[in-house]
Length: 424
Image (cartoon, rainbow, N blue to C red; front, top):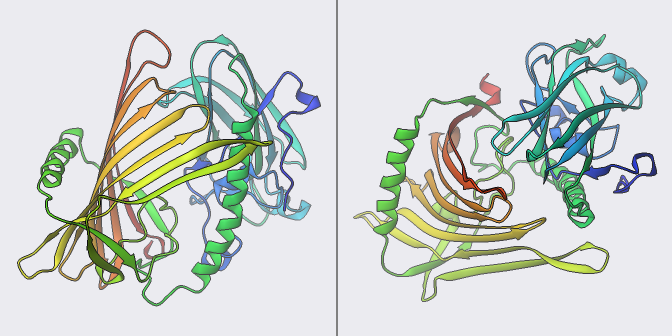
């Protein structure tokens, strides 16, 4: 296993390294024969391992592709320094065979996605690290994301795929540095690497009743409006108010182990009613979990508290279940604490297959110094008994002070449609 990086470096005495547990990209290369290795996910720019890389998955040579890395929110930033292992540095031959970014734009973003600072830079295709420095001065703007956009490439002699092996982010800022938080993110990333390999083994031997038509889906943007999704939200609130009667707990007969790429946020234990054995109980709360982790030396801090209630259900006239409702409570603490309370409704067709999922959430966020609300709606289309299309619609509203005197309000409506990659 790759050893954990030192959080401080004598070569960067005035800078502190900011880690991330995950990265997001506009695309990444996927192919069934490489499923076991999974070396191309954007998270691999964070593992300090030149043998892995993010490889974009666009047609052509990747111009316009981007990668975003979330960092701990910082203010009063003087400098941001990026260290990049450019290209696929597993070997000298692979570095030449694959394309590598040439002209790039580095952008520093705040929580709303607004660009705080940016810089254009030209990278070489060579082994080792290259550095980019953004001199910001005494900026009071909050920064919590670093984005890199590829403008042009050094073309590979064999492959058009454009690769980046590793990215490190260093910051000189007056924001208090919490090494325990950064170390925890680093450990979380390495846990993901281990779990990813286990998932790959699962995908290599899929069960015959796997509920998706493909293991990889593509995303395109939908066109739902704010007004349309808010009407749906009001209807969902009325549906929530209509649930009554007893609570039901469940026993899972066949839990889904892994979701297709790039899905990562759907409940995997309620896909089919045939996999659930429901029995009546007299309590609302079914599950409570509080994790205590050693995140820095011998200091133990609560990382996450999670509770999920038992179900309430609605039935059709023939006795079949049409809806299940439950609530969730999550509290997690890193630099600050956030609390999310959600009400979730799952809808099923007459065959007992999940066709809709609605989540209404409220968020109290200490870092934001305010509150957020979120409405999220999933719908599922089937070919026989397998999901062949998913639509995700989401409306988010934030009202935050961010330590200032005036409240900042941010609203966003997004719709994404997922279709199987093998049909493209």
